[in-house]
Length: 417
Image (cartoon, helix red, strand yellow):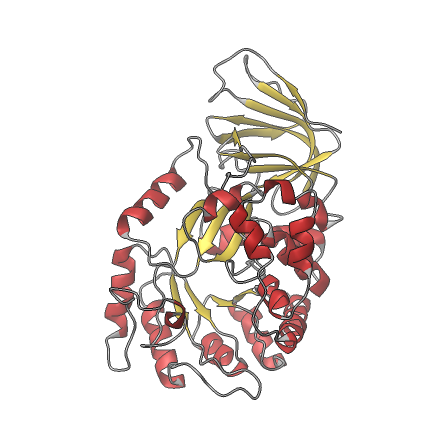
């Protein structure tokens, strides 16, 4: 089946768009067959037998599913990343550590407010996260000049957090990771348990959302007890206990599991298969292709096994899931790796509909980005049309027919090297 478009003479760029007779997943549940009218970059109406204004572009979508543009709740952007993401239906990304300057963050914010045609996914950012000198992820930055800001033991945590907000952070991130896994001893400086709790308290005092990079059970316990809003990465060193899981549910602490990265770390072949998939391969940039086929130097299958089991228990307990990939780790690429994350979340116990929620309305609600993540009048027309029904089979999200960002169709042709 091919996309049926009825062209009517009009000014092409800003003319209204009527998507007719699609199965509409609105970001929370399946509405069934509906028409969706888009005007001036926003959803104008959702209903049956809508009539578009004169000059509207008509897309016949019967037998297909229309859903909100996808959101990746955990990435680390670099130049070209957002354009790569957009070609695969990821219309918004949440950056979890970036040294972007104020001008770049100002540009990201201007784009988010605009309904004009754009060629990149929208970006929200944590800016620079709080970590001790030499702590993760500073070991990955080489000899950066000037060095990235860190939070020393005797430094004023409140002042550090205020500086992050002035620099442009939309939410605040704290990193607690000593590099220890299993029998492997610590390799990185980390906050003491007492200092970790103090830093969280300083971040929360700003009123901003606070997310934490943790992978160890002991750190997760401190983070949840201290009132963080989300755990970034699943606990991968030990099974989570019932008390901790119950506290997460009661306090509304979300989990961004980043199972796509854990799977790659385990040596699973999801990424290589994706890179060779005929639904994906033609749209990959050289960077995306190389990232998907880049292996970790040392596989850690136990991390994935423990993380997946913990996520399954969190899902069973009703903890909110936010789909996030932790791109650009080896075996991940901006855009298509979210398909892997969604599949792994389904494998862990989410229904396909719940998985779609974790990449649409759930992150929109969590991050307070209320102008997107659902298909409803007045919201941004960030839309994804696919063959099949991803509320029944999640892999249908890969069967892309068309993508619209701010109501304008996305050119899926990849850049030429």
